[in-house]
Image (cartoon, rainbow, N blue to C red; front, top):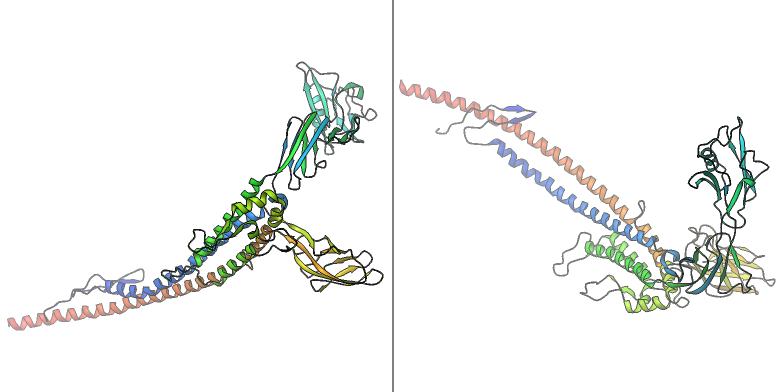
Length: 564
């Protein structure tokens, strides 16, 4: 036997066996490492499998984020007041400024301001050398009382009360109705100033002499700076009589011109002109299209199939993504909720020039595009119709003048189109009624028909105008604009309990958890496998050591026999 085997001593460290080296050149540590690496291939496969699911979850989360961003944008334009933009211009901003709401009608008005609404202000006639001079020299409390809008308010001035103390007592009184006290200084002396904060002739402010016991602060001790007065104005020459004026109690007026908030600033005249801000409206629509395309692009990227390589994307064929894509496309392309092709000027976005690009190979294929010529022409000529299609909220519509929608319950009554049928007797009273095929509640004395609870039409109230004997049928509807419709849809799709993305994300959580369990099992199995290998090779190493000793003994014996 020409080869030799070196001595081997197994070393145990932290429960593991290591090898110091074997004389025959066999490296058991490397051998065990390689065998373990082969087994770890299963873990690598599982980790790759898990990565494919977590990548899908990341795609879900990105899509969910973009959909929530779109929902936020839609929520900022889902009412007429938010969507419609009007601009009011004043030719004399020193007389009046105006802010136009969505309901303001385009046109011009001539406003003449003869007098501003003013509040009562008064100041004491007698001054004091200091704001901290004692104004109540008596040893007992004194009362300072004033009457504001017909109600008397009393304030206690304690012994040794100063002007500063009295100001604080008045201003900090829990029942202060809106009267402001302050200290006025003319450069040498200090005075008490009292001002009512409400303008108009009804906001009277007087010192109540009967209740006031504070010396030097009776009505006769005050001089008037400004008196209570109402604003006096004319609108478009009305009232015609020279001495007649429109009166308002404040300088902020919301009920003179529909949709306009006026702020009176001075006397004089000004022309107010209201126009539609079409640029601001179009910017909203462009933002809607841009964010909608962001969602569409993401859906296409994660679900497309490469036509040249037939390579599927991350979520190609995923039912949840297909459901989301179909619902969003249908909502965008379909007729507006509660709208009618015949009765409404515009009932789909495509009629406004907003449509999906179907040209193959186009840079915007599958995305929304705006035909600027069509949209701009409609916007300039009929901005109200554009606003209705985008932002209508509970706008009633009927197919006949025989009945009308009178009211609804917001967030309970669902927007949509409902079939109506009611029957009236010879005396004109309703004897039967249904809405959308469901029994409805009716009041035969007032001819009101109400949708019952438990149905989409719950809470809608319809007044029967035609009560001639017989059965009357038709449609009633509550219209909802595209922004509100899509916002509601996205709310459902991103719901954290029942939304498809949430359900898929939870399912994938279960799958990745199952894979983690498999990985943990494999890790335990491989750890046991490695430990067993170490034990087995330790025995082999020990046996080789025994053989090595036997070889040494035999070699020694042979050498001795040869020498003898």
